[in-house]
Length: 483
Ligand SMILES: [Zn+2]
Image (cartoon, rainbow, N blue to C red):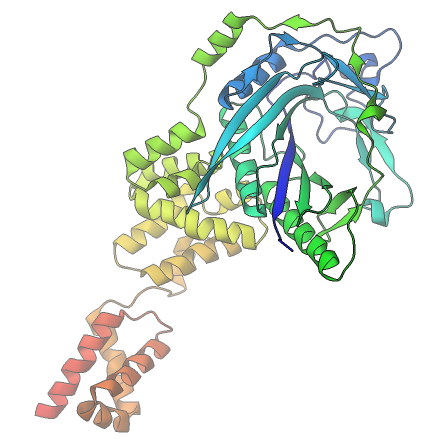
């Protein structure tokens, strides 16, 4: 049995930079509002109301399609996708479709991902413009812990871009890096603020060892995507290895518990009864509009990575990791502007910062606030002045992130490299007095010197400069001999 894993993604990105919803003038800023106050007859689907397309949403969609190298359709044809669910006030969602003579907004794009030791081009099957649904609120926090649910339509009608990939991922890590990169592209295009809860969501289709396709819904971030896929791969392999069979199903990712659970039965395509929306006649997408948006495209992650690698000499993989998040990348450039040393700053951000943010399950923005440019530059300065070693630097970064504290406070607590010969001299003297036998041994056997160095390290909690300590001990051993 081959354990081959095949994963495809369906991503929903809210166009958070818009002022209003996709088809009405309700605010696109629905978060934190009293339930069911950010609504109107159009987004509630009341009789007699008519949708009007938000032009800025179309322009943002064109920008994304261009950034992902997609082919944009000549016409934008809105369809009604019917299904009955409480979060959908009209009982249909306005979207696009790719059959019965209907067409998606854009098709056949790609995103390249750099995995360090290899790179990969992930194919984009299509991009659609559609409206978001309302939100079902579980008073107990999750469907499992609630005896009833409530519905809030403030989100209904928010502009969404649906991005569907071909099943091109062969592990969870690739899927995560892809979602990070897509998020970064959306950030660079000023389409989606991915730090907002629910602004970037993914559903994953996964098939393990030739088994049926299982869909996982409700994944809220790249980190959660990797976790959900790892859980699902292990779950499916366990069932197969114990002789069980898998069925085609839809499951929900429960973030709080780190598990997937079975969901409502998967609707069949035919159930949706797609047909063109009679309220929204097809719109021709003018080629000169596409051209003008193309001319105004900002620097995107791939180009930015190339520039960073050249301008700062930080290596192409390091640069490709930095550009996976616009805020991280901006942070890098701001910090280097303040204190230089791009190699060290990029290495701290990629190798230390990202690891701790993941380990602590910290929001990236919160992590960046803790390790802000001022604090980061202070740590770099300490290293350059020889106040701390590389080993201590890692500890400083960890403590600044975990404890949200200033590096100055850590210095005050005495955690610095002892590099003054005088200071080390004193400690060596103490050790020589405490271990006369070891001093005798060290005169005859150079290997026994290590014991003395070790005692100095122990007394200084690893802060003594090892080279200097070694030199001082050797010198004193010779003096004793001659003296
Ligand atoms: Zn509305």
